[in-house]
Image 1 (cartoon, rainbow, N blue to C red):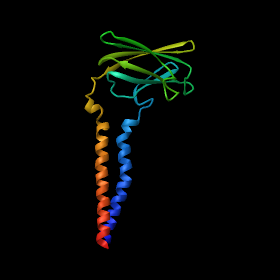
Image 2 (cartoon, rainbow, N blue to C red; image 1 turned 120 degrees about the vertical axis):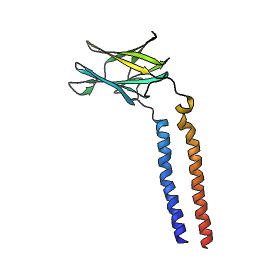
Image 3 (cartoon, rainbow, N blue to C red; image 1 turned 30 degrees about the vertical axis):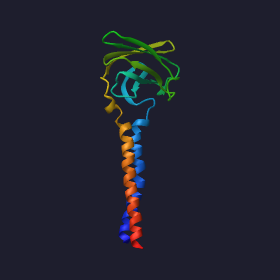
Image 4 (tube, one colour; image 1 turned 90 degrees about the horizontal axis):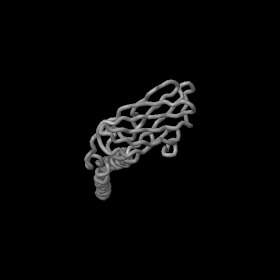
Length: 186
């Protein structure tokens, strides 16, 4: 019966090691929401390089977090004293203007703007950076995809309780086996 005890103890240790890993993997996509995310594009003009980031890829209608890293090419350092203005224009003529600021960003090296994209389709994003006497403009196309169904968009939220319940049942089964095997050894 010592072999049965050993197998039960090993399985119990395995669950105790694997459970936190599984929980952290499942919650990773839920809890990570910060500046940055996926690189949307990177452009260089003159002495400035701009990298645009978005937290969701592809962009979808609704709130969107778009951040910009503005760098000085000559000194390889972020520019922190610029003004960054963003204009979004849809193919249907809807125009929205906003300013990206450090105040809206968690990472203070980035300029961030929160925009509510009202509809899917092709959008043109115009970025105007004013730094001292220098004015630099970048234009890029954005594709805003159709909204996801609520089931697909929230699958991690819905799977989490079931995963915890299954892991709890598995752990309780191992504990019961260990308890039962210790009673039969006596």
